[in-house]
Image (cartoon, rainbow, N blue to C red; front, side):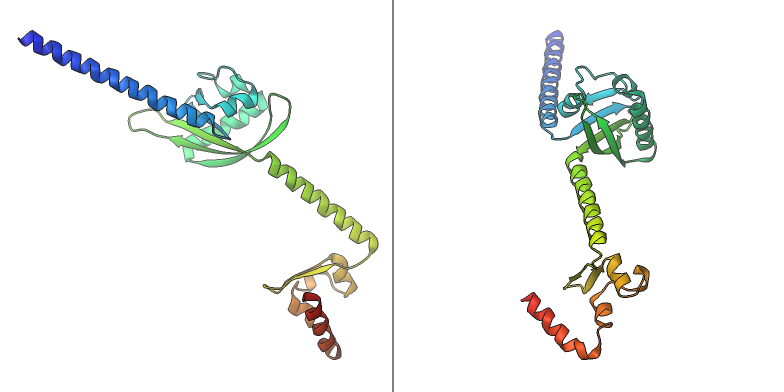
Amino acid sequence: LENERLVRELEDRISDLKRAEADLRESKGHFEVFMDHLPAAAFIKDEQGKVVYANRFLRDLFGWKETEGKSTPDLLPPEIARRMVTDDRAALAHGPLTVSEHLTDAQGRERFFETRKFPIRFEGRPSLLGGISVEMTEQKRIEQQLRESEQRLRLALDAVNDGLWDWHVPSGKAYFSPRCHSMLGYEPSEFQASRASWSSLIHPEDIAATETSIRQAMQ
């Protein structure tokens, strides 16, 4: 009878272990499905910088087939790897940090990312490093186009020698181009950019007509 009891207890423990293993596989499967549909790069590394996990976005970004157990220098060019390793160590030592990264993907295209790196700590176990990289390539492209457009506008305004101003009605703040300042006999630092400053320059006899013109233009 004692042997039968021990056998039943052993069978129960084995059944519990199998259920735990099945639950773990299911949980891992859910995690991987979720991460592989994430529209961003995600990774986990151990304290030695070895990759524990890399999601599909990250693997496809660089054309990686196998990543587990490999270090950053194993996977990326030396210059980029050195910079990333430095950031990894800083995040593990001092806590979460955000870095901007300029990379070249597997197709040779320039890509820009903002990466958040953070330590993952469990009591009694070695720390891990987690990271999520959100792509900023399109935003960078738009920002560059905006800078180029502003530069062309400045060149055009300088060429025609006209002053440009605009007025943000709710706040009363205004913008006066450098040429506008010089036409009024001021340096940009000498004249506050506001509706009140501009109004103070109007001759008293012209104030009423000027205000009328402004109201008509805003209707």
